[in-house]
Length: 75
View 1 (cartoon, rainbow, N blue to C red):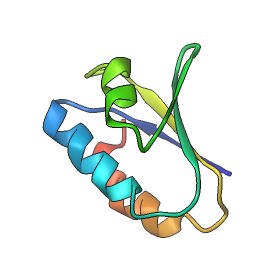
View 2: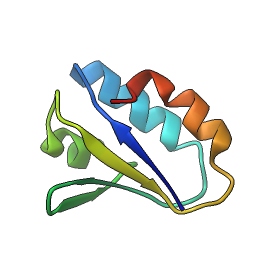
View 3: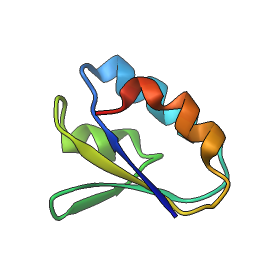
């Protein structure tokens, strides 16, 4: 399992993020406080809000490629 801190500045970034993570088979969650949503859920991530630091948890040991793709959203 790997973790990353993510932040979104606008809704378009959330849409691009969901399109990127949806290409991967393994499960991912996003957590802010007590709220936990599926990282492939557009509405779930929008519920967490913009300009917040959100923790992305990836349940795979093979996620280096995904982490490189997501560097632009790193908090």
